[in-house]
Length: 316
Ligand SMILES: C[S@@+](CC[C@H](N)C(=O)[O-])C[C@H]1O[C@@H](n2cnc3c(N)ncnc32)[C@H](O)[C@@H]1O
Image (cartoon, rainbow, N blue to C red):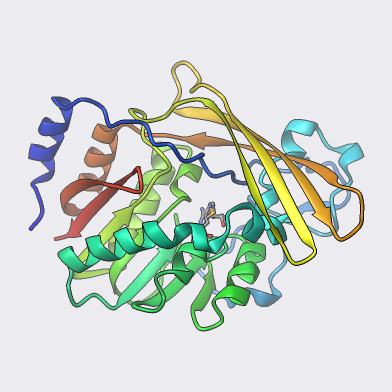
């Protein structure tokens, strides 16, 4: 069923790069807060244990935030990061509404049906607010894993019928196997090859024989284009708009800076402006193929799903 990874890699090397996708790169959270600030205390990540997320503290990167951070004692570049997955997570449904994922979910469903017709159980790593899951759960039994309790709380409200677990996709282990392991717009947070390898190993470890991994990065090195994008929507008594600015990939690096400004309107209160940002990573298609092979995937197909490159990889 699957093309041989080496053959595909050779084919890809002779292919023209994929057409860059049109959708904006999705914004995300980022680096650490300043540990000198009294409202913040370093915390060890809960590397191997799972917990239902509703009573977990807010986690930003690998730090626990005791209270709302006091911006006056924090460097702008460290504070203005990853807030979307922490104190601003409630705005995610307006920033990227669940309905916007319907077409992509249909295409992913189609890919799965072709590759594993009787697939039932999906493990999604980095499931965020559960917007993609909301469009897949009618057909699949979804287990949703995310590092951010705040995002899991958003997802739980939308998907009370899905199972939610707190975990880091690099280290998460559950003594269960699945037909499909999916990583959607979260893999750009794997900012080193070691992190990406660890996330792929997690995916591989949870697949049944004959199952598939579906990896949906925002873009690859071939398709990435710096630029700006904007969006947002209105909800009940609230509205949000954002502007996102994606910088060029740093020379000699695979990372680029994403800066974000949010305009937040809550009821009749004046519009509030908040800043956020992160470093995202991209990998070349050939790096993907090589790392998937090293993680134990036996074959790889590259698909375009709603303009996004999707790597479909089989469990040997
Ligand atoms: C853009 S959001 C995903 C949105 C999601 N596709 C949806 O449908 O709502 C990216 C998510 O990746 C999560 N994330 C980042 N690093 C992670 C890690 N190491 N392990 C698990 N989740 C992670 C973030 O907490 C965030 O919720």
